[in-house]
Amino acid sequence: MQGKSFFIDLTRCTACRGCQVACKQWHKLPAEETRNWGSHQNPKDLSFITYKLVRFQEITQNGRMQDWLFFPEQCRHCVDPPCKLTADMYDDKAILQDPVTGAVIFTERTKKLDIMEIRGSCPYDIPRQDADSKIMGKCDMCLDRVQNGLLPACVQVCPTGAMNFGDREEMMDLAKERLKTVQKRYPEAVLGDAEAVRVIYLYARKPEQYHSFAVASAAPLRQFTRKELLARLRKPVTTMLG
Image (cartoon, rainbow, N blue to C red; front, top):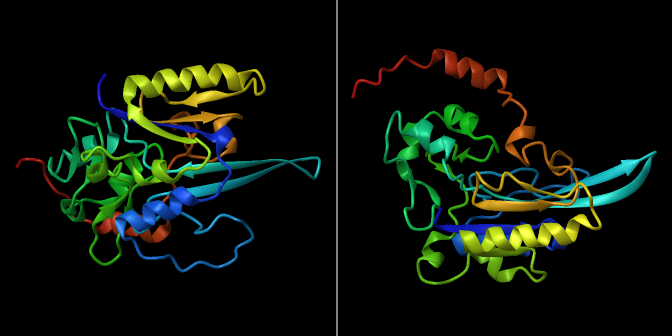
């Protein structure tokens, strides 16, 4: 399998959030309106204007803090992206997959798609939609940078070596070698869905401790709000006959 991949070593992440800021800056995304909600994590979730988010999880045991887990989340750029498979039933140009890198790219044509279907098809709960334009957005692998021989912005600024990017085979080899080292200290360490995605995370603990959508096998069923469900019921039935 050709193309590019990320390798994100969570044992080296210090939650500096440089990657989160760099993503905002490169894509010229506006700031989120944030507030203190009892966590160092901010904003609270991904959005149409936040492609990358460093999540925080505090692990406690017997009422005492045991560990702090940091998870710089982004689109996984699946090898066979379910979001594209779903979108292709309606418009095969709404979501594209770059043939050279494997990057999964959302276009403006996503505004004609059902966000509940597209987001619901993603095992990592990544796609988000702009409330006004209805266009969907997410990490684009900084494809414009990569096509010009540059690293993705998040990788470029990482000060600890947690973020890595390159040819897929090279990243897989790096991930597997690093896993052997990490398992000496963290026996539960694993690579998350490495064969199925282009963003390979190295988890020191069980992935679900980092985030409920960390790996596909841990992902809960997408829970829609009552408003979303009512909107879906009111949506007119469409045919797929061209």
